Image 1 (cartoon, rainbow, N blue to C red):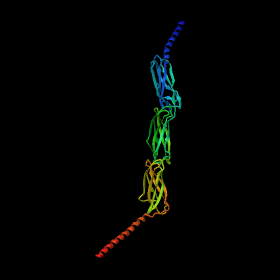
Image 2: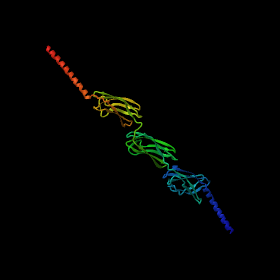
Image 3: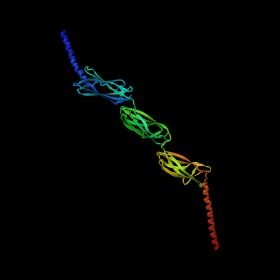
Image 4: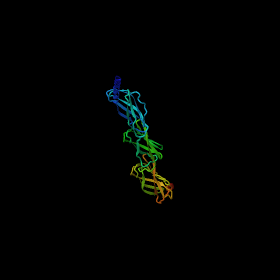
Amino acid sequence: MKPLYLAIITLLCAVTALAAPASAAAADIAVVSSSLDPPVLMKGDTGTLTVAIQNTGAETVAVRSARLYGSGVVPLSEPYPSVGEVGAGNSKTFTFTVRADGGEGTFYPVFVLDFRDGAGSLRYPVPVQVENTPLSASVVAKPDAFAAGRTAEITVRVGNPRPNAASGVQVIPQGTGFTATPTGGFIGGLEPDGSGTVVFNLTPAAETDVTFRVVWRNGINTHTTDLVLPVAFGEDKRQADPVITNVEVTPEPGGYRVVGDVMNAGLESARSVLVTPGAPATPVDPFRVYVVGTLDPDDISTFEVTFEADAGVEEVPLVVEYRDDDGNRYTATRMVGLGGTTAAPLNEREDEFPVIGLVVVVLVALGIAGAIYYSWKRT
């Protein structure tokens, strides 16, 4: 019996001796790094997970397969069914496509490396961060009020509060009832805590809502963030404001003459400024319309207009017409009292000249006829 026991013990020692190097060699395989592109996923994002291993021992290790499994962050690509040998001091990388199906947080899909020759397997949980924070957008400059047809400058700022960079950032105005120049603004890449601005020239045709859509990428995944700007019409505090002052009304035969000053009390230039009498007045020569031209802020100019008015009219409007830098037309009106004075109608003044002229012509003709008759009598 003793020889049988000795044989069994010898066989077990031999098997142990053969298995020990394989197990020891497998223990020399270690995960040295892992990386994810993009570094932080959002829910529904697809990314690329790369795991690197290295043989830190002095012997070759035979690897049968490599795979990844987990929940929350799940693999989309197939496992590696056949890996092969990893030489002493060599390294090898494995790449898996993963998708974030869970909520926010840090998930740990498990990387599994199976060895040959019964040497067991290596399991390594790989950390993957999922955060759903989007890019932020805000309007940092706009006018106090909008007006139909008037171009307004809008500045949109986009910030990146995420822990990883965003790429391909652009801002696109969307909606109806307005035109925008440019039709889209490109910012490009935004590092964490970085920001960029885009300036648009917005011309509304009606009250509306303008949606500034921020489009950006997290790795290969496209995301959007919307910023809505209500456009409501009102009085612009900076626009030109022509004011008529120092008005003097002088009755004249056939009408009235008004002399005064027009001043721009606004903060923007008034262009193509015209002053003209309004109904019930009827403009007449020589100053039916007075052309002032451009009035910059705080500029002042004199004007003079002439007009007719029916008996009983006590006041007439003076109309100031002007345009802004975009060519939009505006008007301002100042009522002017006629002071109870009455001017002789213009047609009466015009009739006086023909009567006097006729008398003069008759007298000259009679003088010439008398001279001719006197000369004829003497002869």
